[in-house]
Amino acid sequence: MDLSNYFKSIIDQDQCSVVICNLEHEIIYMNPAAVERYGKRGGAGIVGQSIFACHNRQSEELIRQVVDWFAESTAHNRIYTFHNEKENRDVYMIALRDEAGTLIGYYEKHECRNAETEAMYRFS
Image 1 (spheres, rainbow, N blue to C red):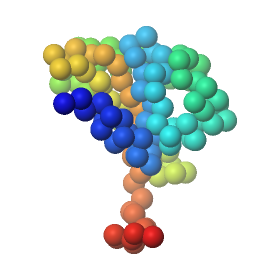
Image 2: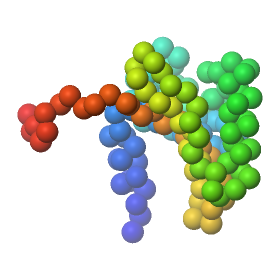
Image 3: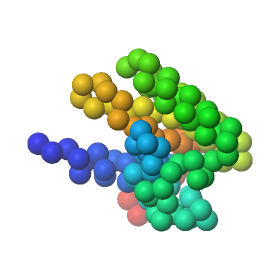
């Protein structure tokens, strides 16, 4: 069974930004939340570009260090990188690996710390 459509749908439904990069540091996918979040920087138009076009030199060096750390061990898969105080979100870099455990890329994941305010099971 090909699960790729299911996995894409999971990421696309996430309300927080997900930006996926290959090991050449090219943005290969942005979910709709990321496209909206980074609209002022080009939105979907930055897919295919270097992630470093959106970051300063210090951030570029940190990203490279994280990817090197991911490559050191299959146990190195998630690292906390930033807290956005204004939005009360934590930002992580997550390793992407193939079935053999080989590092194939990484993604940036935003996680909201605010409690949900929507009513439970509201179908409207």
